[in-house]
Image 1 (cartoon, rainbow, N blue to C red):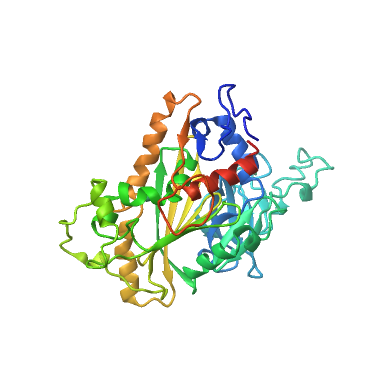
Image 2: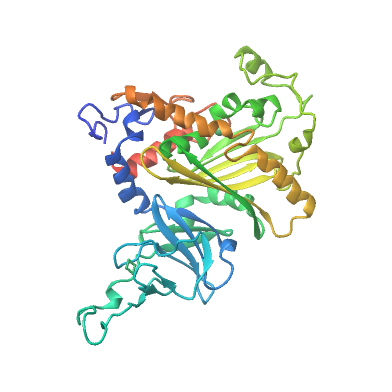
Length: 418
Ligand code: FES
Ligand SMILES: [Fe+2]
């Protein structure tokens, strides 16, 4: 609804809609609590990781949906299950390790224990000691199980939802997004390693950043200097029907290609355009056309917090995890495939230097979100300008557009009802 109060009488969503985004959304604890309730506990699919991270019965992985701790478990029958990582007794975290294997899940605090479905199966001293104390007769263990997750998988990626009424995963994603996820997950996955990074900004600033192809070749001077990504390259943006998810992709320019667009970069006098730079060891810029389509860069997002990235042969799942109004954890899972030869694995590890907290082309993203967050105190009811490419929320051949950011906000407003 246009004009609905967000948190102060002076702050309304502008009637213009998603071309203007109120800065108050990035530092407001009331909004943050509403996001937890409506987005993360609501009808959204949130990525939990890869199925291959929990290969054997009893294997588990801890992660979060939004900032809510959850556990992903491989059951005895091989199926994937999930539950909230919070003991029903007095609320301790149940699983403390990032990864593990357990026959039962026993809380360290008072040893209440749960099975793989989250059923409460044991209460220490339930009948007291020596006939004294213990739980009352009407205490029923079956009334104190853990809150369960609905689980769905696609190409080895595992998603969870607290809302059992959430649409089927394929319907939630739409066919274009499903196809682009399958494109970078065609075979069984092998995990290569993790980065974790704390961003000192609201999670939505990072969500906007990865949906923003406009900034990439301007902010990230490495991209343009070494022609990994320019807006003049062949590519485009795909936005799913409702705007929630997106894909941005491009094909590599090679030196002595047509040169289209270089004049535009020169005309804009961008600090990134330095054709006289070169790498002493250019190996990192090499690559294999492993998906046979010439696409060398694909950034895909799934609302609210998944990013799936291909930069040349560096393949990464990123999870955006809110940790407070002005803090976000970003978990980067570098992956390849079980049948990769050593040469391709080495290439992926080398090109992993592109990304992560100190990556040649993504370290600046860790800074700009904080630059926005630090400038919020003066905003007082003002809005940003999200008008590149007009006001449409639609796929396009041009990447000089903020259409996918508008799509994020369109979906966000719908679920948040603001
Ligand atoms: S808080 Fe878990 S057993 Fe008491
Ligand atoms: Fe970026």
